[in-house]
Amino acid sequence: MDIDLPSIALLCITGFFAGAINTVAGGGSNLTLPVLMMLGLPADIANGSNRVAVMLQCVVGLRGYDKNNALDRPALILILIPTLSGGILGALTAALLPNLYLKPLLLGSILCMSVVILVRPSMIAHSPDTVALTPKESRMGWWGLFAAGVYGGFVQAGVGFMLIAALAGGLRYDLLRANALKTLCALAFTSVALVVFIIFGKVAWVPGLILAVGSMTGAHLAVKFAVRASPNAIKWFLFLMTLFAVAGGLLL
Image (cartoon, rainbow, N blue to C red; front, top):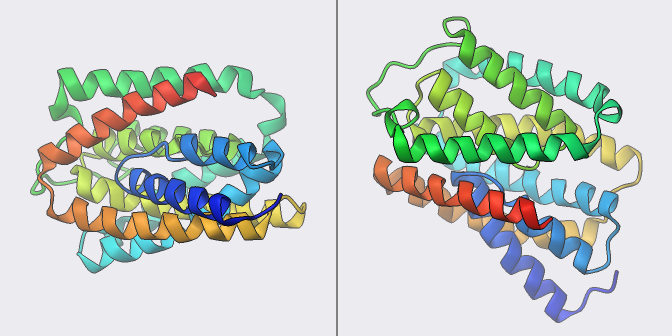
């Protein structure tokens, strides 16, 4: 892959929008993966290189959410247990279930979320003073996190929507705190996956790091938007991104 000025600009701009989208909603990889492959990277190398940007944008996003007291620190371990358990299972069985079956499942889940946001927003758009549940107190929340973990272990792209559904719908977090915990889970997923990709030599570091520059900038600004925006604004942004993710997924 040749890196020239237009390629650098394209990676930075794409990374910026993907980082912002991932930090407040999800589906940013629908932008970055096609661009990486368009620039000449094989699909597996593009997938591994994309994880560099996702991991670093999660670090920036998580730091921003925590700095603004949006991260529920006492719940971290309880949230990560079902999520990473599912992630390990998904990674171990990835070879058994082709993406051919996972893609329609993901798109259907995202589309259902967009309908819920539009028809019954109260199911996920809780007020900030709503008392959240722990995974021990909500079977739906526990299994939702586990299912998101399984999917994340397979392919990860779009897993942010499933995590928001589990955290906001199952555990009754408002969308700001749900996004903060979603970013934590994504960081955990991506860190493990990136190590695997590095071991198998599936990371092109130069395009991955250039993409990360834009992604980190987008994540930084997205957190500023999220902590200042009204819950209704975040809800509608999430709704638009679910539709974008479905459209992008159908084109891939």
